[in-house]
Length: 274
Image (cartoon, rainbow, N blue to C red; front, side):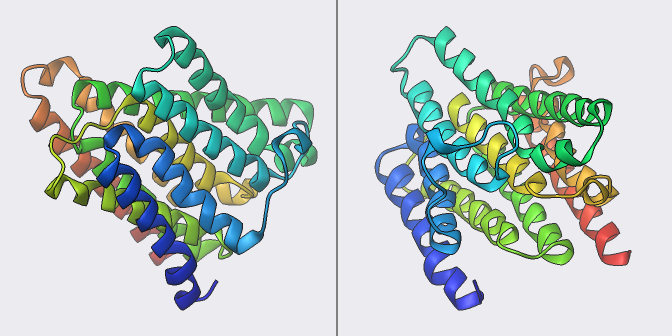
């Protein structure tokens, strides 16, 4: 997609999904609205990814797996935030998606690596995405306002910049779409207050950030310091639930968002100066 096509078939559908889903339906629809905001432009750019039951779960195409993971994550997240299923069942479903994502996206790396190397990739991926998901989930529960969407708007914007400068292809455009979509979710607070980023939305945001950043990346790209910094930048959101800010959650959230932006800015600087 060139810039005009990106705006027409990427940004505009994503903004519409977010304004309709969150602006009209309310924050409990944030998870599904974000998934739709990414999946619809992806279909327009790359075509239909095939049905979920046709996916090769062992060595399949990672982008198709990411598409379905995001869509299912958006559905599960919205169900969670709407409290339609028992909490325990939702947590199990969320954890299953979080653990499946590194497996699905690491198919090219596992094919090109030894058993031990593939296991190492999976272990690192599982650890990082699990810590990221729990950090965003707990932060959203402790400070359910704008801190998590705002921090991840910044993080996804950093993802888009790094992907555009280092890899090209449609991934940077989808990361940019996700960043703008989350930004418009923040804008909906102008007429819809209070804004609550639920745990289910934190799941979809985690899947989008990790999936778009690492999908289709080579071992060399994944080991570059800017990519590592961009991936782990949202870990700063753990500060929101740190005991030292238990009585000043808003201050902790402000500092955490600032740290995410600082880490992302440093990643961009390193990439630009390389």
